[in-house]
Image (tube, rainbow, N blue to C red; front, side, top):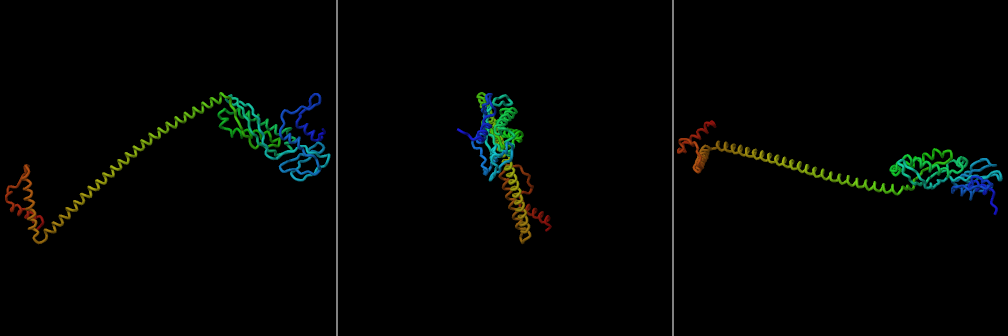
Length: 332
């Protein structure tokens, strides 16, 4: 079966890296999907070519780089020009194979990941490195091993985003000459040895118990504080209530005293007004006599020793004497 010479040449270039002693090519150990795509569907020079969107076709003229065909209509010279590489300008996703790495605390890990990259310069991607995707994958693996060696096991789980960012930064520093830009790197799975996993589980359980104990103690503390605060507020409210009661009681007593004083003053004013009226003195004499008789009646019922005037039997004289004293006092 005959095979087109150009396709056969590309196939040998991509899938075989050198010749054996008898002249036979030796197959590569690793072939990328892009290489398989190039070998199986490398376009032929048909003079009039239509380049798809988001693709770049690298053209060589007589074995040397000539130009890069842009998307759309293009023309080539037969026999002299040939399409050597087809580069996809879309974002490419590459699975990074699982590999072993040792952390800073000497724990062996099995880690794999996913690499997202894009070809920015088709010329560099074609001539700067023999196999760009394979080179980037190998660089990602070595960079990941190097970055993991700087972190302990706990930090590897806690600082995944930082680890991914460091790997992307390191890849971009090296892949700039290849015309490739690494967009992001994501760690898929991290596998630890069974014993380490058991110790991590025990550590997690101990941490949970610790948090539960702390939360319980904090709850007890908060409850005690709330009880004490409630008692304090109750005492404050009780004292404020007692204070308000005393204030109200004092105000009531003051108002009562004031009312009694006002009533007594009003009574004195009324008595004074009554004395100035006609027959006022006679009425006053009658009132004094009644009070005098009432006082002696009370004394007769009690067994107290009381000093009395010598003329206690002369009620009329005593009333007359009192009225005389009243007239002198009032200026009548």
